[in-house]
Length: 166
Image (cartoon, rainbow, N blue to C red):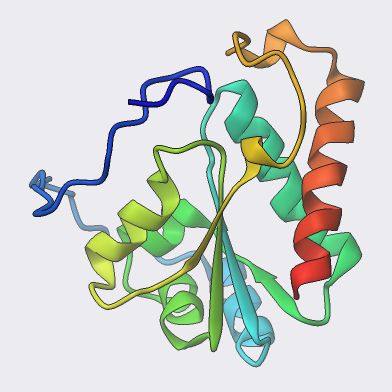
């Protein structure tokens, strides 16, 4: 058991167990999302991100946005995790068809990559755990526990480190 991330990180399961969810399907399709997916289909890297409401998730989310929209917009497509997970449309196709998928996780729970493997079973994303790329008080949880400018600085640090790996 490792608690260096501020939580309990257990050894990986030899034989993972699964939860079964019942996700209501929708007939709705967002045309802007589909247009975005079509425009970004040729980009070599799809970037998933933690969308969690905690401090670590917020840093990962902001880092993914910086990476895709400022630091490497010609090489990366920012994925809408909700759209990719809940509908088999353009966002999921971006993940399914990308030569490289990066999952920028907020912490060791790896939510975005686990979610997407639930709908794309053979997905093998490159998992980057953002909270290991910057120094902070690991006892903090909420985004209200750190000044906004500090969150933004950590997000920039993470985005710049990931951009160097592209």
